[in-house]
Image (cartoon, rainbow, N blue to C red; front, top):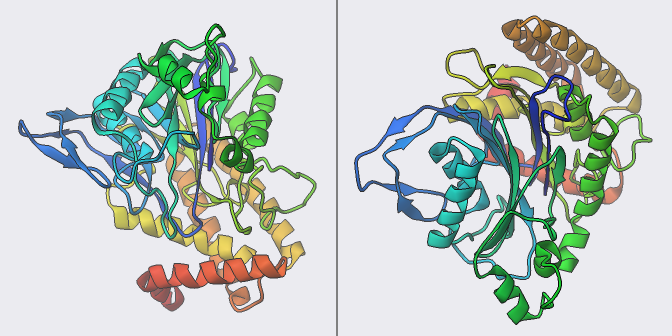
Length: 438
């Protein structure tokens, strides 16, 4: 589960294009923020993606990505040209192959090999035709799906949706929100040449009517239970309300939004209808990281990342997506993993504290982010990161006494997170051993 949004220059306050995405995945699945430099390869080289080998290109771009720790591909990212892509799981009537390229592989491949949004569409669709998409996307339990993509550069944004080997692409006009559902209808700019005839042959599309990709290929049941309609509607409503005045702060509000906003704290507000998704039910995922990018001609690409789960309890940190400027992306996977786990400890401890302490934490987090925003506005990113690090260290100490307390919430919620906590420690024994010693 995920949500991705974009606002074009005609909808933002400063004329930039702003992209934002929550990565919703299984709760114990670390999301690593990595910088990968340009590379050159010998002719006829091959590349191992998550499951299959493909032909390698001679040169790749420098990329900044947020990737699940165990796979080659990434959930979202930006390259040296400003090309920015995020993917969504979608559930279609087409069969999911047992192996192939994951949607996350396709995101990374397009970032490495393309400079513009249109080039990225060509890259993804040609790879889709040559190698196909498929394979398990789950971390601790199997999960398979097809993919949709929101792709933007410093000029344009496109939505690309797939159903097995079939696809359609639509140019964004001002604002757009995509989620875990196909959404392209009568007006699309590109399609697989066999798409309409295939859907007609299957009886999913009636001849003589405008072709509707989403209505033809969506799997109704899985799409409905994903909660994607509620989430995409929520995001689009918030974008429309601020159209012409959208900023990065607008995107932060969207990524932090919940289906029920009546609670003072949302740590146990599990619902697949929330953009800021919290796990704790027998289906649904956890927001494991949030990512915002601002793209403007002749300006360095900048953004905001949490590097941690649950946007509503995290601090967005400013960063550049350039090797020439300071940034928060790591060159080493172990460093990126430790960064995520340090913040995940706080997430797990907040489930055990009394409500008054949770409210105090939220207020302190808001105050700290306001201070960081002020520093970022004058370009002081290093001090911003230092303040966030001090905040994390402070609450790691303050919340440590609650380690052995009972998890708040329903009996099912308690049981669910008790198992998740046990498995997280098992997965990263050395980290938690050192954390306890520290």
